[in-house]
Figure (cartoon, rainbow over the protein chains, first blue to last red):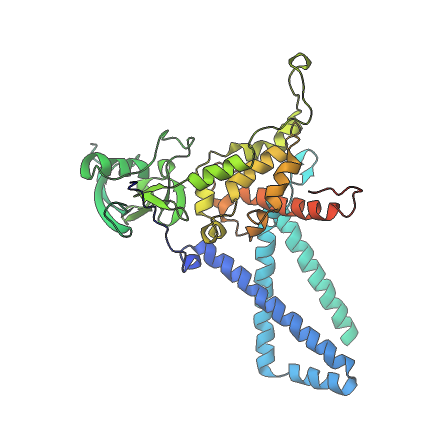
Length: 132
Length: 251
């Protein structure tokens, strides 16, 4: 009879065992804020479809200090999510060859972040202009 | 032994399948010098302190891929990890994570070997050539496209870094997928359609959630995460192409 008895270690709490996994879980966790904010916007759309009075109720609701705190939290979570998203991007795409050379990782991450920042600022400027 | 010799504590996760119900820690005090690797520390234990300690090693120069261990929780080649970098703290040594432990630091790698076989890690020629026609030619650019993925030494550190493999050992995993990718993008190879079945399967690329730690720990800079994630795109394309091609692209 074989004396072999391979031991399989349990996986419970795996993500706490390595700082890399903790960061990964935080990154994945920030996606919940993205989802939550999408829900808030959807609710706004539903209220908008019910006419001006309903829309104003929704707008008034957003002024609640708790909501404002939540918005700041969401903003921070979104920024972190964006950063980690573009940080992993070079690992997820085919090599980009420019002038016969492979584009380095930091160039891919950097351009991703630059595009995200530009798009966010353009959107902010647009909404700011419409609101005035 | 030289004058600047110091003593470091090495904590080893021991497991003897004949006597132990589960693994337990054992601490050894090991004299070391600045040029000693963790592997040499473990070898010292076997030679002078406890001959029953089991571990794999061979080349001592980060090329054979045998001596992978968890060192302070990180998958590392013990031959290129140095005791001086941990002193005066204790260094923890454990068998590669996510694999069954056979004994002490020796893991069961049967599953990995089966996966390596399953990806058909050899060139399946596009068209047969006779000897008279000569060798298959390749440009430097064609070589460069896959060369990085051919550097794998099968050390399995990437599997020990992959929580998805830990949670589901059926997952084909980083190294096998990197090697699969290496052959699929080789200009001489025509086996992509066969290998895509594996890429698309339940055990395939979509088990990966882009943690990316596999590429961080790779001692040969293979970037297996890149191979896996490029094949998510390939798999999606493979799926949708069948709606566009007259006879169905994918199987």
